[in-house]
Amino acid sequence: MKKVLFILGLILAFNLSLTSFGAYTGLNSQKGGYIGAKDIKYTLAKDVKNLKDNEYITLKGYIISKVGNEEYTFKDESGTVLIEIDDEDWGGINVGSSDKVILEGEVDREWNSIKVDIKSVILDNK
Image (cartoon, rainbow, N blue to C red; front, top):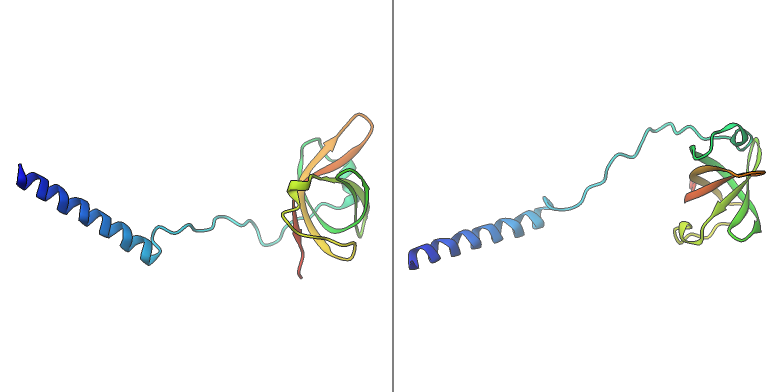
């Protein structure tokens, strides 16, 4: 019985040493994933009106004004579109009207209006 307990103790110690070695060498560290294509196709503000409800899009331009509770006007070279950004979707960044942003979200068609429900706000540092 003592031999069995001794062997189990050795196995446990060996496994623990492998786990700590893996963590030390980075074998257990988290890694990134797919980041998408390099050439992102941005949707123009003027084209949003032609898209289907819930279609996922990416916009690139400027948030130029606040028009209501969590509602803003987005502008790019083609025109403007109404967007909605929930407070928790800002990701902790502050944006002014001169800051270029990349916005990801989905088209939200309602009875008499269309807007884009933004899920991600990224500063465009290029």
